[in-house]
Length: 350
Image 1 (tube, one colour):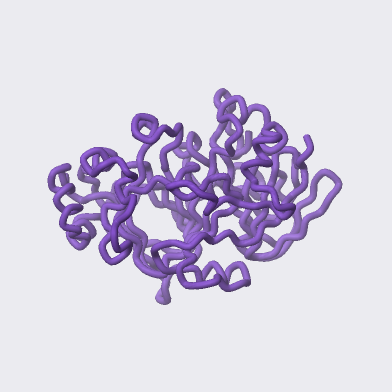
Image 2: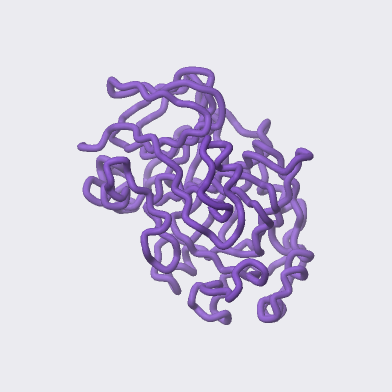
């Protein structure tokens, strides 16, 4: 395995249609180039929808991460992962800072993506809330409260009645430390001032049901499928407030699966991605991973090398780095690919 070093990463913030990025700058310790850099794509082999290189991570030696992984998939990802997923990490991690409310949108399922987008991956995603507006609470919207029906939704999209869409959705209060699972197909919107880590399937597929006042011409809002097809990926059924609240876990509800390791999302997410909150003293099995240092300072030890860690740092971990030990008063979000076929998850590590 030619790749085995831990790789600290710099910010990777492609320009976007919505405002944000200041909270990413404060967290990482460096301001963004402008106020339309609301997402930091961390350890990304996924590019923005429509092609080009935007979104792709470039390693410190100048190689695109995508090319490095393709040249040595076993070393980067591990043989069990490669047997299940090939030479893709099957994972995308972002820091996302909503400088304004995000539009109502939805992501397609794997089944829809296979049928219409030529992709094995859809875009189930999940969030770990890092910050909220002053006052201690943030707001997201999840799912419709009533059965909307496709013709009604199609008319809202045609006339761009975002207010009606939002008014029919479930408002959900979130606080720092909360984790939220967002299944593919579920319409959602993130409120202004919410800063989060987003862990998702490795695509940039978003059906933008609302684009007025966000993207002037609504380009690619229907993923170039036509709206009659695009709206069929949307879950238009009624979802109760209690059902949507069930997608949220509070910090005290996160189970410890191993010493110093707490599982962020329920096992329902394992087929799509996994994440752990890791503290000093934890021992981590070999795996491709994206690390985000949430607080404190410490170090990672493994393979005869020590990597210092400080708040705001992001680190790329190849499988070939082997087992690691976490030292110090530090908390890390360890983002992991889905469980390989035939492998039993054990504390989130294959």
